[in-house]
Length: 120
Image (spheres, rainbow, N blue to C red):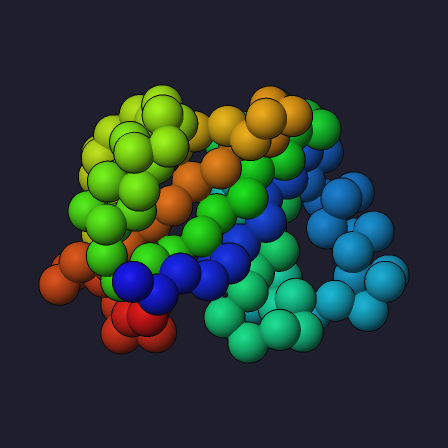
């Protein structure tokens, strides 16, 4: 089972101002669309996202794996409750749970309908 960090997503109430802030820091947007700005984090395969998908100030960390079933079994063995799997963006399947400090964590796995660049 391979797993790696995929993205850090931050909710924003003013996407334009938040995007301008991260551009000021030198980050370049890879995608800018209504409700979402995806920045190249400087680490290949890791995105920094600003979005309207989360409440302002909320942060979520996403990982990507090649074996979601193994991850789910591992979490179950260690009595970590999760939601899912459910269909997610870019054709992925996802599960969701929280760290001990309450940070939302998603683990995604690409499917045949996911873009090639998402393959682990």
